[in-house]
Image 1 (cartoon, rainbow, N blue to C red):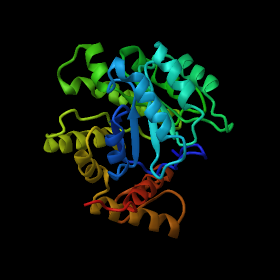
Image 2 (cartoon, rainbow, N blue to C red; image 1 turned 120 degrees about the vertical axis):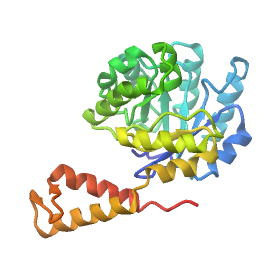
Image 3 (tube, helix red, strand yellow; image 1 turned 180 degrees about the vertical axis):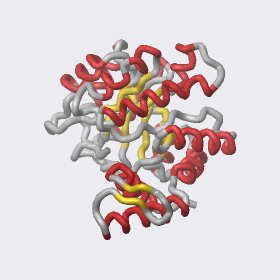
Image 4 (cartoon, helix red, strand yellow; image 1 turned 90 degrees about the vertical axis):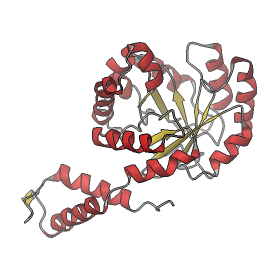
Length: 288
């Protein structure tokens, strides 16, 4: 979950991923100071066609040196000429933490980027494919396991909704679960939840985050800084979860192996690993 050595390191448990348009340097600067775990500079959907070149050059200038905050860049779709220019300009930069690859529908797309966009320092450039179509979801595991440079996968729910023609949010629960399972099967971290498009609907965002957490997502992408504290609170462990995790870890330390606690809870290696993840999350600094 960390960036390549020349970029800023991602926190061990990133929960907030803030998208920001690449052609708005002043907004990017605010995003870097927002407290988001990862800032994602978007060169694709958030940038008009006549602003692509400017967005690319502004982003290249930003990433000429490592930054204090990890910065990922969502390049343009790989079947466009813009993507070729994006990869050529950005891959060698020392401040680039990772690339987010939109509209991925096959493992070969990921392999092609991994092999032809290697940074000049010889390190591996972390890649995050975005699954935004029915065929992308159908091939979720194949894409997640396509190359060692893949460090995470995620859904692009806006495009997926259009591709599937769905209106009810519940219709996306199956694709969400499929991507979560694919990530785990490929040895990747749990995916971050896709954006909540209404930046004023913080109550709806909180409810949606609770549902996503129940499905198995970890953290969420945001499009406005005001969404960050809501996401942080929704994905942070509750006091009861922390207390339960502490009991499990203490019991496992006192007597290794499978066992049942006096509360009736059974402990095995998977339960212990989950408890340790909960305590790692609990160590995060609490935001106001």
